Length: 518
Length: 113
Image (cartoon, rainbow over all chains, first blue to last red; front, top):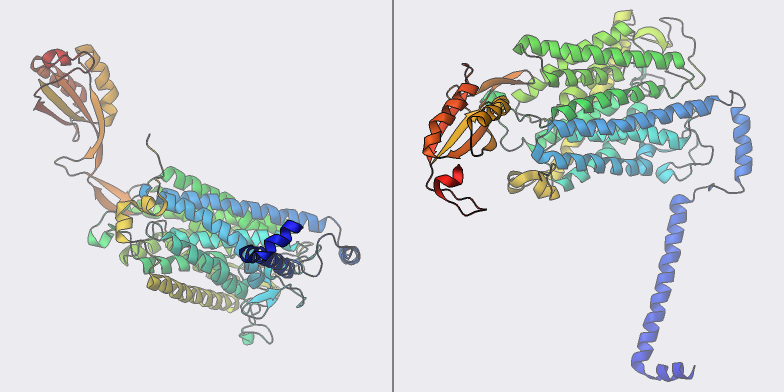
């Protein structure tokens, strides 16, 4: 103590002491602030393990007493299986893109696919899911459906037994399933932008697509109060139309959005250096690993069995699930064959790229109508998609747009076709509302509750609604994507420098080559 | 001393090596190359569009031998690699100033026998 008092008489030591003391108080203040912030962000009204959980549990128990206790767990298991399968499609997308690009740009593709998966998972949790599936207004959502006091932003007010709307699926399981879909959309974009995008630009547009473009426009189609989902009914958008927009698993929401962002990016970036187009007498830039590309396509097809059938969100609708899985398969088969035969009649050669893009095109196209069409309808939808993808690829080549994997022909063009085809091929036998957690509602064929397309005597209503919805989403996507890319381009962070691209794109951006040759 | 550079079809490499073992050669070097001759490549197709590919895969086999062995080896290579169809390849014979065996320090014809 005496030594301390002596030290305090010295001015320098006094200053040192008070500085240290001030620093300690500052640290304490930072800790307290962080604690308050953390509580505000993650606290919510009912934290896990609260004693308050008991009455909540009792209330939930009485609510689910109405349906058998096995229903929700089984349906949740089904949705989670779908989440895992659709997430597996990331491996498929990565392989497809890596196989289609040249060896010198492969590392960039690999890193970009992983990076956008990680970013999308977080953004979708933070506010993507809230914007897209929360209730709010016709354009954007933010709170739990049916309860304006419970915010979904940062999953703030999600309670122990919070389920999504009437589905009986826990919010977190639904988030996982929808994150996998969002991840698909954001990965599709990167396909057309391979080989010349600066990684910083990659990251930023990834954030833009996962955080804003996809959830916002997705909300319009799939949100509880989205204006396209509620279109045609009393008090909503185009109430005289009498029909809302349907998209069972996302031909428009996932694939069209992804495809149109992709083409906007490809247009803004320009082609890879050295890419000469067919009309100028140029040679193509051939894929560097077709093996990986084809395996990627097969993994995508496999993952699609989670994408479409699990979108019923209900295993209790086992009849619907089976029908969706069958339709998915039939469209993929006919799509692939249609494309490869079309090319064969043109060049007398059997083209591997046509058959995989054709199958993927069939899968994209059937994604919207799969619940509501017959097997024959699915097959025809697939054939048209297979031919469309070939023609659309030619169109891009003609307009000198460099799309290395064919993201726009497969996802945007066939996404539009699939969406519109519902208006033609909806067979009039299946519920317009889709599945229910307890099973399919009984539908009298061609009744008002069934979805009936033009070829089945349903008139133009469904077709009109589908065309309107597709047009609105595609236009909005393309314009906002062009604006986003124009902004990135203006700052100069969209396209890699010419020296960087010529010196070896992977070396320039990532400092490594994809295959070591030692 | 001469260096024999033979541009041959890749699938003939194993057959050629087996045949040369019977004839006798000091050693050989193999490089994978791409190129084309008078025909200017072949027609490929990509996504339904045809294009001419000027770069066909070939193997370059290089053997350095004494002058006396040159004709024997050229005949052996021609015999194995001749199929009569376009793309069989070419053989070039180049002069070599000198050769050294690193292990023993020999030079001249003894280094390549």
